[in-house]
Image (tube, rainbow, N blue to C red):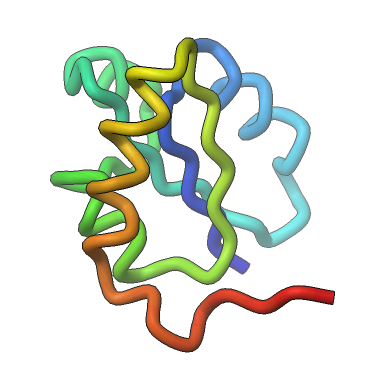
Length: 86
C-alpha cells in the first residue's frame, strides 16, 4: 500500500518509523520542498501529482489558508473515482 502525506512536518518521519516492516510506503509533498526532500522519503513534485497516484492521503496542514490552497491543488489531480463515503 502507498500512502500520500501533504504537509509533512515531523509527522512523515514518525509515520515512516511506525509503518516500517508493514509493506506500506509513504510519498510526501510539502509547500516547502526542502523539508520534504530532507525526510529521505519519495517526494511528489506537486500536491496535484501526489493526488494523481494515491488512493490514501493524509493532510497535516497548519491553518485554513493552507487547507484551502493545498486542497485546490490536490483536487486538481486525477481523483475521479477515488473518493468514497460510508
